[in-house]
Image (cartoon, rainbow, N blue to C red):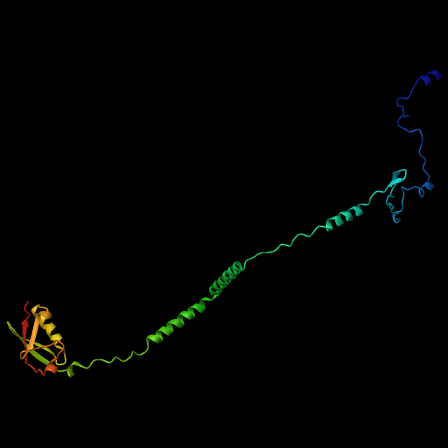
Length: 227
């Protein structure tokens, strides 16, 4: 029986799964362990101190690492000796500025004129129309007319030619030039080709019946100029 028991082996080998050492838990270790910390207690922050500068060197020579802030200060000092850039100047000619100002003023006037209400424009038109009506309704100036024709005396003058007598009525104060033209028109001749006489004397065109003392039915003779 003992030989049979020794020959039998367990189906599973648990030595590979279970560690050889067994963990033992004790309540006294709770306070000492860092895993279990009370909620109200704040952990102390660990302040990292700046790394100390390490001096490196061989023999008498020691090399000290330069600080970065010192390097930046040196670069700024080197840049400061450069002259500042020249200021930007705005160059504008007086002529251009004057032209721009004129254009702006003109545009402003146009906008102001456009901004006038329509009522003002209508009022101006109505006032101008009223002024024109007043000026047109002014009384006309008195015109001095000539004396009425009834006051001027007329005279009938007979003109004797080769065909007989012809009578023409004119005013006594008219010039004979008017009579000569009327006769020449009737006979279809030019006044320059005719000669008028009274009692054998030539009658001038500038004279009048009054100046010659003519009366009604007095006769003038007419002759053609010889060519």
